[in-house]
Image (cartoon, rainbow, N blue to C red; front, side, top):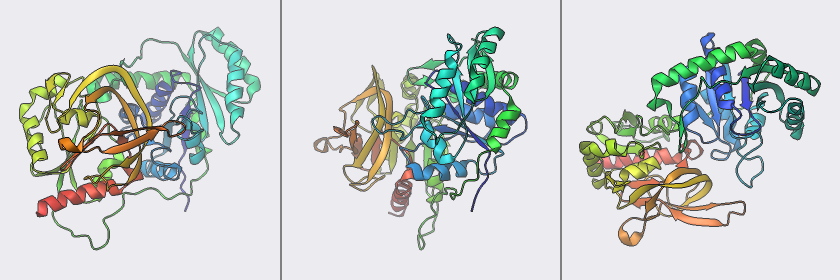
Length: 465
């Protein structure tokens, strides 16, 4: 079987070059032209896919060769791109930057090769002219398996500047497919973990995306870019699908799994909900900032990542929901909390009372904790059996005290982590208490579907008890 999906990878020499601006603008411009555009993001970033979804009207999806393994990149891409006329993949960091100490693993270049997709390089052209040709030549020749097929010049100062840049690139063999002027008009606000998510500024974000579409439409050769996307060869991999329940599994009432959302909890991979549903759950979203109670008949709770530190007073003020979460945990129900979810289950966050499910105090710090991790489950939990190995990602500026569970205090650690080039850095992390699994580690469940199956099975068992 082979599948034809016209596709482009939008990359850059380094972070800050403007690839999010260009990728989101391209998605919006092509969508406005009537194409069904499938948006994708390389790496573990949760925020950019929200802007991609706003630009296209389709779910933004991540492609992470470290978290999910190289073998799942094309299948997950095909799953997300089903029915699309065009797929646009935004890269991460610089084109060849990947997981620290692991070569190309997790890089945009690796994903581009796995997808056999042409790459368009977004170059910050400010403060240079002829040197841009040397930069592009270096990126185009570094890895012959990466097809660098075009350049979009960003932050161009003037018509004369653009002319000099184009002249310099004429001999490079890499065509210029667009040139965007410097502007302060379209700026997305940032804070301690990057862009402010769409869910917190939907109206302003919609205006910004519309302006990006207009900038790209006027500054880029959309016809040439679409032709380039159509030059990508067919993919022979099978699309990923959430695994169905095993044959002979009992079929009863679907347990309700409440999934936190809203402005405070925006970090989640799209496949997680799909896996929960495929495992037999009825997934019901709720907003901890607005809803006074959990959804009726909640049998399990998933609280993903986000920014509870920004909304700590509002979350704390919702006392009825905090009490409902605490009561659910006390009943032994399965609860899975990642990063922001861990903070919400804590006793307090920056002094504001939280749910008190865990005897943990959380606070903001100046220190950024960021990086890929290898993890092994320290003991049995609602997510994993002891010894289960996964890969994850940490990204936070908060800390908790204690830093990990202590069995003597009734809270066991969740994961044993290793990281670093030599995998010589180690610590335990997270908390397991009765039916609660809470951790800073973000895990992509598509790489380990047994996580969703185990969680839903525990919900079913609790309902049958």
